[in-house]
Amino acid sequence: MAFRDKELTVPGTVEVAGRHVKRYHIDQPDHRLEPEVVTAAYAYLPRLLPGPDGGTPPASWVVLHRGADSGAYLLAYSWFWDNVVECRIAVAGQPALDCPDDDPAHFVPMPRPGVGCVWELGVLEHERSAWVRHILAPDRPDLAGYLADSRTEGPVGF
Image (cartoon, rainbow, N blue to C red; front, side, top):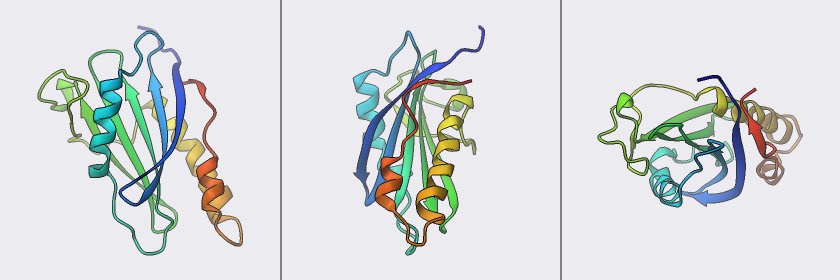
């Protein structure tokens, strides 16, 4: 199968486990995220978020990605130590990654230390720049500005 763009949507920011979480969804053009997958992913999300570190604004972003097959991927990226990103991942429906079944709503911790695939990493590029613009570069960090600065919806991949 040839490489192709997928569709990125931005459902908005939520507060989870004391953190501000920017949300991104990546769909297959012909295989959208099912409501039950979205519900299961956000129920699992608190397990992927770290506690506060005492100095860094409690901000994270999450990418929920529906694979072309039975897989769904939930990636939680969290800022810590002012300028470092931690990534924790849960997977569902992907037996190749030790999922117990092919149910895309049955999330389990990913056993490998990944950081994202080519579609997900476009969001990471944007979030890095937004963090510098709104948190690190100004005289005073602007958390509200950072939370309002999301990658544009639309094709993602190339």
